[in-house]
Image (cartoon, rainbow, N blue to C red; front, side, top):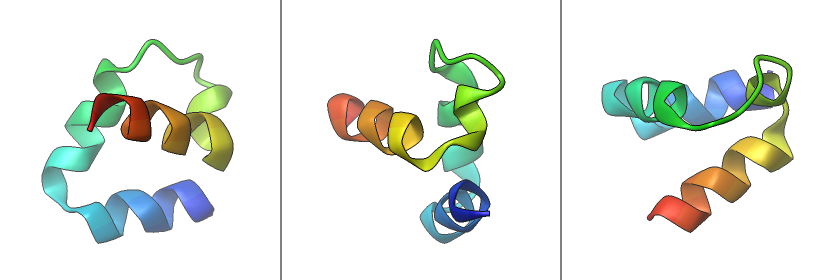
Length: 42
């Protein structure tokens, strides 16, 4: 739920960026790995 809310708040491009990250499908559902990748890439 948190990841979905984060991506929604960040806008349309955030979903494309999330797909480009080297994360497992399971990790893409977890807030901590997703935010760590966004922080490292921004």
